[in-house]
Length: 141
Image 1 (cartoon, rainbow, N blue to C red):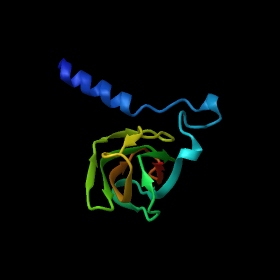
Image 2 (cartoon, rainbow, N blue to C red):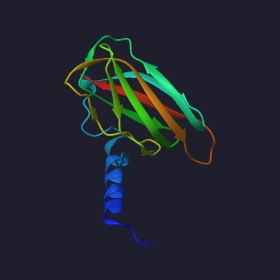
Image 3 (cartoon, helix red, strand yellow):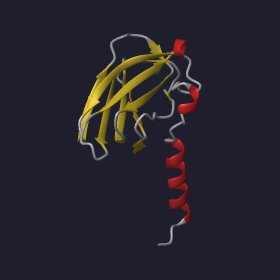
Image 4 (cartoon, rainbow, N blue to C red):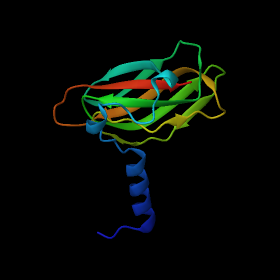
């Protein structure tokens, strides 16, 4: 099978966006994420198969960015939407696999600091254990 140049670039870009760091040598700490700058906005237990969940954010704080971490099983994110207090919606282009114990890139919010009201995820839990994965959403001050 011969791949076209644009297809190859898309595959490389997708893999670079969702790389999981080797945490074994760093005491299981995520790189470049200061605990003082981030807080947990919510989490969900994700069932095996395709599902849709909403994480409501009621802190009323202003955030510059978000990211999410996945534990216990890999997840394929199909869609993610961030809703703000002024009614705006930000459709985040993820559409990729996050490995078990991996995380997304830092997603900078449009317009600088924003108040988030909720984040919607559509995803599929992957793997053979047919168990659950945990998805935790973090906000950056």
